[in-house]
Structure formats: C-alpha cells, structure tokens
Amino acid sequence: MSPVLRPRKAAMAFILVTAALDVVAMGIVIPVLPALIEEFSGSDARAGTINGALIALWALMQFFSSPVIGSLSDRFGRRPVILLSALGLAADYVLMALAPGLWWLVVGRAVAGITSSSFTTVFAYMADVTPPERRAQAYGMVGAAFSAGFIAGPLLGGLLGELSPRAPFWAAGALSGLTFLYGVVVLPESLAPVNRMAFSWRRANPFGALRLLRSHPELSGLALVNFLLHFSHHVFSAVFVLYAAHRFGWSAWDVGLLLAMVGALDMAVQGLLVPHVVKRLGDRATLVLGLFAGAVGLGCMGLAPDGHWFALAILPNALWGLAMPTIQSLMTQRVSPSEQGQLQGASMSVASVAGILSPVFFGSVYSASVGTDPLFPHPGTPFVIAALVLLAGALIGWAVARRNGRAESVAA
Image (tube, rainbow, N blue to C red):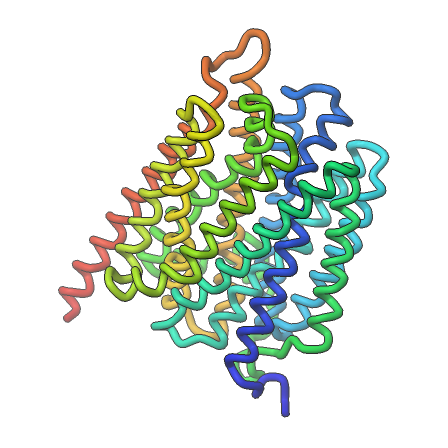
C-alpha cells in the first residue's frame, strides 16, 4: 500500500509518537542548559542575558527557515522533512554535548533553530489527515504529545543533570537518532501528490510567507494573538530555571519535577479537556478562555511569596493549553490544503519574531531584577509583565471573535 493511502488513524499515531520523542529530546536539556551557560559566563546575572540571547538566536533561525521548510513540505511531502530534521537534531545535540566553550553552544542553538523548524510540518501533517471540524481536537492531541515529551524530558534531564551537565545532551542526541530510525520504518506520507504545490522563493522567504496572513481579516487578527501568546510563553524558557534557583533555591531535579507536572497538566488539558470545551463553547470562546486563564497563572507565579504558591500557580496556568490548539484550528480553516505548509511556516515565523524579541526582553528584565542594586524591586517582574501581555492577547482574541461573529451573521 502506498504511504499516502495508509489508514488515517495509523498516520496520526505515527506522527504523535514522533512528535513526543522529539520533545523528549528537547525537554531533557531544559534543566541544565542555563547552568552550563552560567558555568561558561561565571555570573547568574550574565547567564540570564546570555540564555535569553541564545533563545532569541534559536528563534531567529526559525524565522528564516520555517517558511522554507513549510514550503518544501508542500512541494516534496511531510515525511522527508520530518526525517531530515530528526537526523539534524541528533547531530546538533552531540555538538552541544562536546562544547568546550560558549561559542559552541551558540553554533548549536543556531543549528537547533533550523532543524526544529519541522514542527511546522507536524502541524501541516495533522491538517492533511484531519477534517476542519476536528482540527482543534487533533491539535490538542499534538499538544498532548508535546506535553508528554515535556513530562519525561525534564525529569530525565534533571536526573541526568545531577550526574553531569553534559549527560542530558548525549541522551537527547540518542533520542533524536531513535526518532529518525523510527520514522524511516513507520512514518507514512500524508500529502497526496495532487495536493502538492511548486516551490517558490517568493512564498518561502519569511516576508513573502507573512503575506498569506493578510489574506483574511480574521487570519491577521489571529496572527497578532499568536504573536502575543508566544511572546508571553518565552518567559519560561528565558528565566524560569534561573528564577526558581535564585528565588527558591531549587535544584535541577526540582525544576525538572515541576516542569514534568506542568507537562502532565498540559497533556490533560490539550488531550482530554479541549474536545469537550470546544464542543460546548466553540473554538473562539475556548481560545479567549485559555488566554485569560494563562494570564491569571502567570500573574500568580510572578507574585508568589514562596515556592509552594509558585508551584500552585501552574493550575490556572495549565488552562492556557486551551488556546494553543484552537488558534491553530481557526487559522487552518482559512487556507487551502496546498497552503497548509506555507501557513504553518508563516505562523511559525510570527512565533519566531516573538521568540527573538521576548527572551532578550525577559532575560534583560530578569537581570535588572536581581543583583546588588536591581532596577526592578521584585525578581518576579518578568512573569507579571508576561501576564499583562497575555491578557492583551485575550482581549484582542475576544475582539476578533466578536467581529467575525458579526460578519457571519450579516452573511447569513
């Protein structure tokens, strides 16, 4: 049987397992990367700025490469893009495991930004095999697979990090290699030849890809909400580990355990709760609810007086997971099957712009909140600012939904 014609359920199972293995590999290094940066830089304050800059570099590479990779998957299919990405990630983690200094980490993060751009193809894959009315549920399943990876990844990374700060990188390389081998054997193609589009640099460059987002008023509004969502979310990658160690004295294992709890809650929300909430409220109301709940959770984290309250704040924050699959679902319903890869590339470019600006911003705010003479009086300031940004996203999402609802009523 041709790979394109394999059963849809099997295809979804394959891509979900592949996505989970990829995220396990990424999650393993989260508890130890800031510590390794601090080892090279020799300063907690400098580590916050450098960690933010490295995350921004990762996002910058995604900004340029995501539309290219999305367009290539529209031309050649999703399967080869996903496989090459897994192989590239395996080589990149080995490079970072061997890093003798900070510049090796810089190169490693740049390569990781390129190879990780295949996540655009994962989302396009799900659009290929799922009807529009079920895409919120399908993207919830992808989000649950990602969360499952982040449950195992940080736990394993925290455990291995107690042995050596480089051990998690070797484990991540091994898992990415396993993902590649798994995909070679079982991952089917999802994009039929009839739905493929010729590759064009006009569409594949990030600025050309962004033009697609202006093709529909609601798509433009959702792209802005998507930007604010990702801008807020990078507060975790930029300062979470450093803040927890500085404020509460948490070890790599403590951070890995909490991140695993975050992943478990997010998996439950996206894998189990999203279908029921969407069925009851619809995609747009679910999106707004998720953004508002995330803002509440971030605000509670920033203002938490001790580690117990900080950990409890992950409960409202977990409902943020309602927003991510619904915004993807709403956006995919506005383009044709042959443009799904291009859409995901453009959407990832928007997220990458947020990823370029946000980590540098939050890393700098954190650096100005600690030390002997901090500019900001409270080290939780980055989380409070992120909460306000996400609240703005909730308000814009509500306005976009309301405007679209009026337009549909007039059309009816």
